[in-house]
Amino acid sequence: MLSACTNTELGADVPKVGVDKVDAIAARLPDTVTRAGKLVVGVNVPYQPNEYRDARGQIIGFDVDLMDAVAAVLGVRAGYVESAFEKIIPAIQAGTYDVGMSSITDSKEREQQVDFTTYFNAGVQWAQRAGKPVDPNDACGKKVAVQATTVEHTDEVPDKSAACEAAGKDPIQIKPFDEQTGATNALVLGQVDAMSADSPVTAYAIKQTDGQIETAGPVFDSAPYGWAVPKSSPLADVLRAAVQHLIDNGQYRQIAENWGVEDGVIAQSVVNGAVG
Image 1 (cartoon, one colour):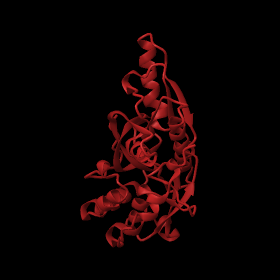
Image 2: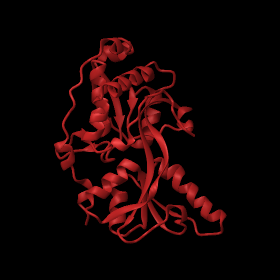
Image 3: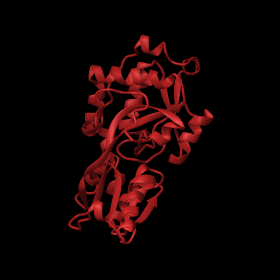
Image 4: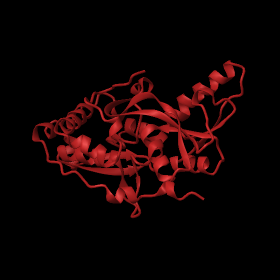
């Protein structure tokens, strides 16, 4: 059985970046957040290396360190509340959380429900068992693991499967898992032929499985990650300003490099940056 994909040793070694409050940006926070002294952040785990629990049960990861840095700029703290992925956006709409943070792809469809502050750029990356090649553009009839409700589950792999059927071929057998670790384990154990996940997640899984799985094809369908907030909330632009401050002073890149995800750094944060 695979144990490496739940390895948390990386998180134990990642240093925190010290960040100072910026009064001019903090002054723009909604009064409710300022009075509470914290941002209530809904998050789904595990999705290594972006958000997951370490050996002590603490939620850590690249997303977490960046959100902690943004909260420091705003003079508050981030309070993380674990949630099922598919419940985060409804909870934002209901006012349960201030922010939704779970490697959420900013899409035009999701922008109808919430606003997003972009903070990272990720593509889709398939993985296969070592020495057992799979072509993501011709995976007809193959079993492909995904994390349930991610864009790979709802859009990317179903679109590829539909193309198979349109060409008269067998559809892709899509195998959703509640957690990414389940999808990775299924691939390592040979229960599926491939998996599809966001590029930093696949890269991390490959690193943690000691050569048992490898990339299948290039990164494609690059799109921004965004933090979700209620529609028309002033918080979206406040978060944007805080991220941009960290981008401009170099601390954002340092956080990304600490987690080995610098390939996805952005030069400018925007509100609602969906590319399609």
